Structure formats: structure tokens, C-alpha cells
Image (cartoon, rainbow, N blue to C red; front, side, top):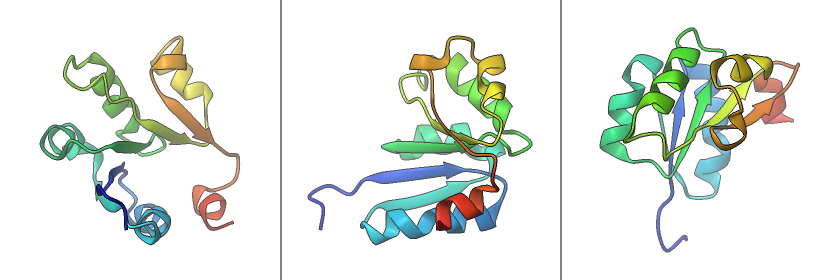
Length: 115
């Protein structure tokens, strides 16, 4: 058991994708939560998660990333961005090196996680 529970927030409109990602963190005794993009900023502010995963391929994903980066109180919590189109991150946040961590794959994300 971890001395401190690590809270992971997964932001996506795809509940199946969230369930796939939930398998690994729960195995390691992390506290895993997911929310739809439209609630993301409120959930981040109230839950103060240790890790944030953002599904950029969700319809509202790019808007959520822009709003996190524009918010003074949230920009210190850069999300781990999951996408099949990493070039999309560069168009949203130029010079993204310190703004987000990116996980990308040409394969569907479900097959990457379960592989």
C-alpha cells in the first residue's frame, strides 16, 4: 500500500476508454476518477488530482487543454495529453515542451493500453 494515495483524473467523453485506463492505476492502488470534458475544470479545482490525463481526441479535448493553460490557478498542473494526432498539441500550445506531456499512437488508444 502507498503511504499516500495518488489521485489520477482522466478527462474524456469516452467512458470505455476511461475504463480501460482505470485498470492499470487501480491495480497499483491509485485513486482513479474520470470526468467528461465539460466538467473538467471544476473537477480539477475541487479534487486537486496528482495526475491529469486528457484525451485530446475527445470533441472538447482541445478546448479543455486551452482553458487549463489559460487559467492561472491550473497551469501549474500540466496534463498528460493522449492523442493519435500529436501535431494537434503544437497547434493548440506552441512550444509545448513545458506545457503538456504527450502520449500518441497511430493505433486506437484501447489497443495501446491493453497491449
